[in-house]
Length: 208
Length: 208
Image (cartoon, rainbow over all chains, first blue to last red; front, top):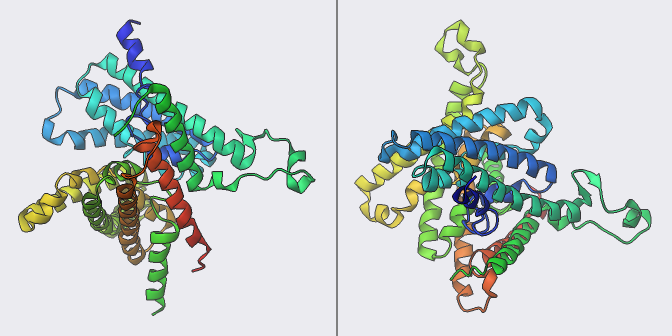
């Protein structure tokens, strides 16, 4: 793999992260991070859709008329999302119930439209494939960090395994109480805000 | 009278208690991008109310008479009564929304150029606003009736409009505060959204 391809994959991980830097795909990053399990499944679903849509759009890019390109992109993305939704319903029914509308909302997830529009429409098949993987990993990284905090502090578990010892809990005679705010919407917003702060301090990016 | 009361409580619930943006995280991308300016936020807010108020009941009609199992029985062909097209729901909903946005754009351009110019750039963006597709998906998941879906469409749009206008007002005041470099822009907006959503949580005590 040459240098440019490596840069295409590694750049979206930290420096040009889709969520914290490009401000794409925030809805689902917040909504599916209550449990790590959901976050991992969502990352796989998004990786599949993003990589496939990037490949398909980049192969079709010369045949798509500029005026109707949004509709074409939406159709490609929606078909891929139907595919992944049916697979999840068949093999991971419980998680697909928990994710509820958010699998369907991958269609309007800005990362996919954004990468199709900004990258796959101008670049060839191979680069779009790498870009798809790079951005999915960047998205997955943030999802996993946010969900680690939310699950550990909100329910005391990770991947549904008890991490905080049960004897520490108040009901068992200890002193510890789970932070219920982490399970609610404000916890997600604030954790993501703090992660953005850390990421931007690290990369020295200042928005004005 | 009872029906009116039911609709009113549904509207209150979807504007305040289960605000589509602050508790389901839908429409974050445009929320973060547009809330920099108050006028633009008001314009986008009204556009979202209108489009979601039209598309949710329209998608209800499509769902009831075309997609769900047995929906095609009105055609009168016996073979069609067992057809279940609900796996096509994502692609039909997004097509309805895209077509509706296009239609609204053309109508506004023809009959109210002033409003069209003030909304101009935001209208096409609404097609990929998660809150619109999300409202349709929630409508399908919760099994609303036609009346309920019309009320839900308008009031979830109103919830979005309320959230984006209040955030624009907060960000207007924020210009005069001294924020750490890394938090400027996106970071502080996320944390503020968290605080705003915490304020909306206080509505959850209301028993309807």
